[in-house]
Image 1: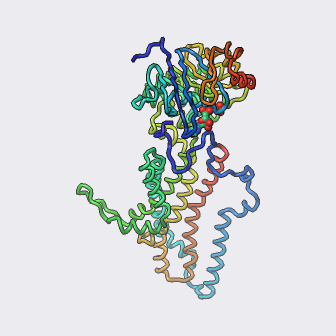
Image 2: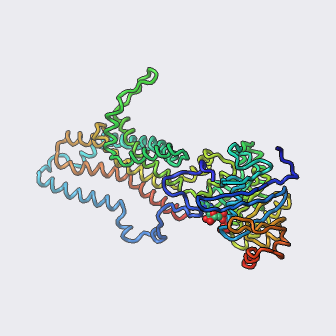
Length: 295
Length: 248
Ligand SMILES: Nc1ncnc2c1ncn2[C@@H]1O[C@H](COP(=O)(O)OP(=O)(O)OP(=O)(O)O)[C@@H](O)[C@H]1O
Ligand SMILES: [Mg+2]
């Protein structure tokens, strides 16, 4: 076997004739929702949480006897434009981190199956390091280590806090992507490599034309899931001083200085994240099921 | 040394191959002339696949030599691409690219590897699909084709590189009995056109009908070989006779 051609891995090489096992098997019945699945989906959970919050707020109200003050919904409405901007910033951060992390992670994942041992090991080490570091610690490191400005050929490129935060969040995304990528590449049957090899494709051509296009489908569910997780992690940036939706929420609460606002306001923000992420996770599940059947 | 058609197109001399401590080929020799059809038969695990994979350098060898058109295959300075252009290979599991249509599968290597002109390649690819009797299936994905159809696309895909020698490794072993025939007919057409074919097969009827020469391998050596008539009706070695009595 032309050793340099085939993907390398620390685990055992693909077994000749083994079927690619991609995704956990789901029984066909699972696609038929049972009654309790129909009742307890994400939306009913959200409704329940809102109802629960409402009851709590009522109690706080009753205790503080603040009936003559502006109503909670009015205040929420008043702050909505400001908070939405903050939330938009979270979304922006998540999209940028995801984009950077994906590009780096795909590259790193490909290096993880490199025929060159040193390359493979290094890529593996980088992946493991960032995959097993707490996201918040990575964020702190990026905020502290990256200078606020970098000069390239006399050109000063500023690095404001939020850009550093984007970089900080893209590192774990990169590491997860790298692992997904490695798994996806190794899940492609070895016959694909052999037939490409016998047709005269170089290793690079095989990767580009044959292997990578086939990994896309396999990666899609994990990739989307990772994005949802990343989005939910974006409030971390408020801890390192970036004015995201959490920072703004805190300011709003400080400005109003009302105890009874605390729960509804945070719940309000929570519901935004939920409404943004829940459809993504539903879609992920749908894709997983679809590919599980098809492949 | 330049190769001329009166010399063997594929010459295998005393080839040894091991996987670690496991000796799989223990000194195999055979000469194949241009236009010949060779069938390699033998029990499972006797090294048939390994042998034909050595011919196009999918496997390396530990000893001996293999030349294709006078060119040593297991030479560190070998121009891989030159070899790939000369030798086409078809696998038991078809190994089509599932994300490409039948036509794209056939067009890919000439386009990307040989960098040929797209219009010419497409015209040739369509002609090849027609030749393997798959007209009308150009835009189907492998998943939408039957096993026999996929295998014929795989044959067309190999032919698109204009090889001088074709290797077939049990190409009908994964097929339904009904579809075996359509693939065999395709190979027969090829052989009739003068393509040099090296087949590993369990289709004894086919081997008898089509082969110019039959090799029987067991435990990494060639036990017996000869033209089909002598081989099937007058086998000398007891191992051959036992094998034939089981498969015929
Ligand atoms: N990549 C490999 N690594 C280690 N051992 C191998 C490898 N490929 C084949 N072998 C071993 O080499 C021996 C010959 O295998 P080969 O596939 O050539 O047999 P075969 O004659 O084609 O059998 P079959 O008729 O079942 O296809 C077997 O014992 C097999 O286990
Ligand atoms: Mg075999």
